[in-house]
Length: 294
Image (cartoon, rainbow, N blue to C red; front, side, top):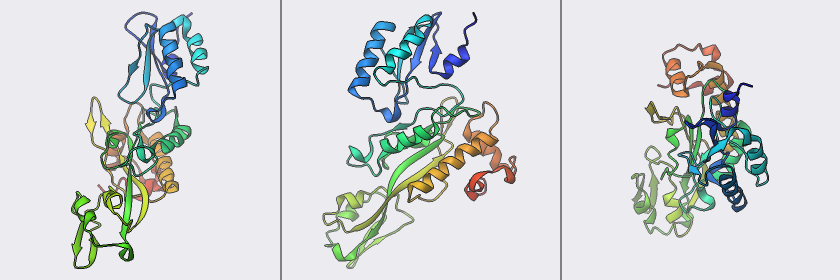
């Protein structure tokens, strides 16, 4: 009976150079694994692999040297530890994320909660080519959000609150972008220079800032055979509902307009060259700007 390698790859089993051996990619959302999951992965690697695993560049785990005739048993054993296979090929990949504000002092958003929500919404959705989401919690950009088809970076929109300020000047020193100045008895924020890093808020001893935690979204990142830094071509997004609308519209636009085997950045380039009809832009007219502001 012929082996359906395409279906196996879709389910995370990638052919190795060694005949009838597969490297199994696991579904690891936001780089997080429990102790129970780790123990089961180790058990499977010992029993069905060659005793080692590979950590991928996108926070996943791969178990190599899984035999063709043991694939179903491997899946069943992993399920005992709440571990699932990942995906490969032309579909939405597992969402990556840094640790975010739940753990990191610099974090501006709950990256893992957002990664889980996006994973539940899009994981394994069939598309013309692979599509990657990456979430980083702040301007330190540990996750390198701009390398993804759609990157999300946490940020904090700030407004100085005069009545609570003690004029210490700590916020001015904390600001790396030169957006904050101390003018007389006023703190002045130049919004054109502010990058939403939130360092002023975190440094302030009296919490003299009104804040909105939100998202900086970039589009069209690539890192592989072609390299392109994703572009943050829309304004700061201040609420998650709008973020989800942007994500939905972006994925649908890619689904509707990309050619088979075409990454998102190249679909955008065709759009900017007016090779995609405006009536095909889809939801939110793809926010009315993706193809007109470049």
